[in-house]
Amino acid sequence: DAAINPGNSGGPLVNALGQVIGVSASILSNTGESVGVGFAIPIERALRVARELVQDGSVRRAWVGLDVAGADRMNDWKSAGGVPVVAVVPDGPAARAGLQTGDVLVRANGRRLRNYLDWEAVLLDIHIGDRIDVVALSDGREASHRIVPADLPTVTAERVRLRGLDLTTLTPAIRAQLGVRSDAGATIVSVPDETTRLTGLRDGDVIVRVDYVSDRRVVQAPITSTRDLARVLDAIPRDARFRLWYERQGRYVYVDLRS
Image (cartoon, rainbow, N blue to C red; front, side, top):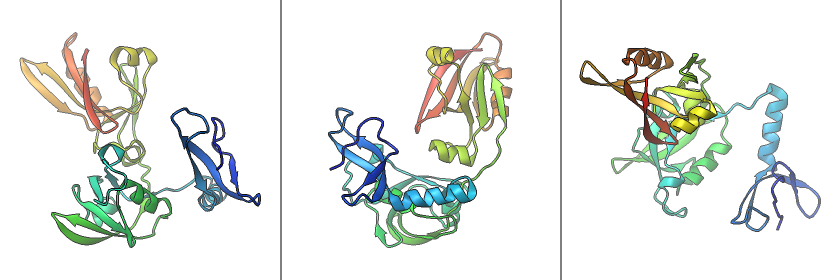
């Protein structure tokens, strides 16, 4: 029983023989101290990451191009109901394999998937170019799919400053990093503390739509890029109110502002 206290994360985990068997990661505790359940990264995985850092200077993450229902959609971590797919990136590895939003993953490489934790465990040891043989339920029928993970997209995004916000167009790489469901939008990279206090907007929010009134007509303008956002904000009459819709951690919320 190895205790993990604040500040221990990143330290070596050793067995009774003094052999390093893992890297301390975190603890699940009601008190924040050593009483609880500790977690560590297996040494095999840590060594693999270390080798990639030494050889390439970075860690290349295998990307499958789909999002699954997480803890917020999991009533029982022991559930045997499979893993619901909540989003599939167009033309990504999962889409090319034939998977669609609404499918339920039930097996991967022969391993039964009870919940998203099992799916994450499969992905942890997958390399770019490996294959994942998946069995999924689609409209109640089982179908086999072969996903070939690719390198995480690194599309360069334009970055602009609007109304005191630093923004960049949402790309597949940013989308995967933030775990958002929206396919397009303008991502807030940096926001002043005062703006956060007044509006509630935060770094990582993805602006997806702006509603405003023009010539007595309600306009609902979808935002697919920073250029879209700049154009729409310029079109809003001076001193008029408008509604900014954005995604945060999978939820769509809005804030009413004045131009």
